Amino acid sequence: MKLKDIPKEELELMGYDDIAYMILDESKKKMKITDLFHKVCDVLGLTEQDFENHIADFFEILTTDKKFIMLENGYWDLKTRHSEKLVIEDDDEEFEDPTYDDVEEEEENDDVFYDEDADDDTTDDDDLKDLVIIDDEDEDNM
Image 1 (cartoon, rainbow, N blue to C red):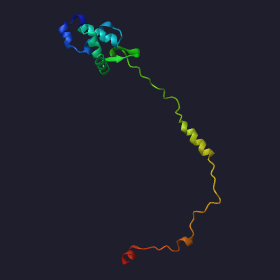
Image 2 (image 1 turned 60 degrees about the vertical axis):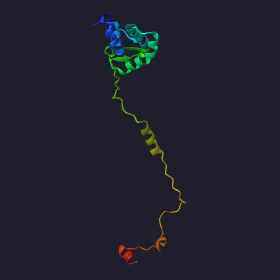
Image 3 (image 1 turned 90 degrees about the vertical axis):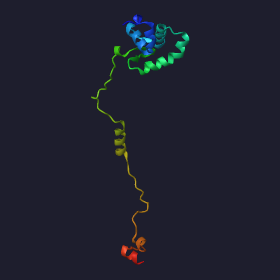
Image 4 (image 1 turned 135 degrees about the horizontal axis):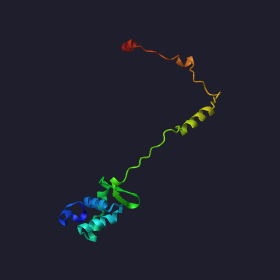
């Protein structure tokens, strides 16, 4: 059914999205949101003040309704007229980890220097001469 064939009383019961869908479907071309909503307002007999008061609501309706798609430069159209383009990356390229080369170079260039004058970490037996070992049995007797 064409938009012009629908009685005004029935149009008033329709939502902005339904009327916008019919306008885009009949015109078979994409439209800017302001032009589309002006046509919706014309169909419903709304004033310029109504246009200004409800354009934000209309934008929200279009963005949440999956029947519509926003195109470049502010144009809107029916989603059924546009296919989604999938970008598939070529996995044939060899994966190169940029940090791998850095780590390999660090390992090759790592020179280990030892401080010959540093104190030795080994302990002398003299340090342990005052050490007393207590068994659990000895602990109970104390």
